[in-house]
Length: 115
Image (cartoon, rainbow, N blue to C red):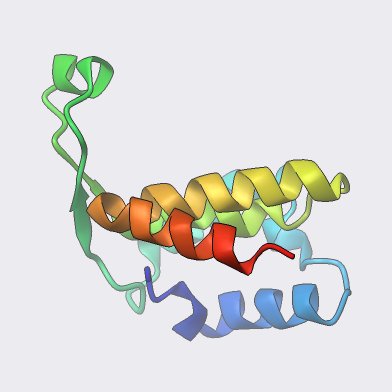
């Protein structure tokens, strides 16, 4: 949904995760902040925004939209979590947020995919 899989350095990380290999160091928790800065400065990253549901925390700061790629990115970092359940919960949560107003459809599809 965020188009991050089209970026070479992220596609490599996803391929590693799918093959059961560790994520590149650039996406581990120790380097997650540097990876996030790389994401925000990479000119190849698509920039799409999603509206935030009315939320008093965000509304207090005048925030009504967020960059979809920024909220999807933590799902990649969660792949490095050694606890599979915690990783799955984080990934689904972050992906749902990145789907914006379509999050309910995403969660319904995710639930249907469970064995």
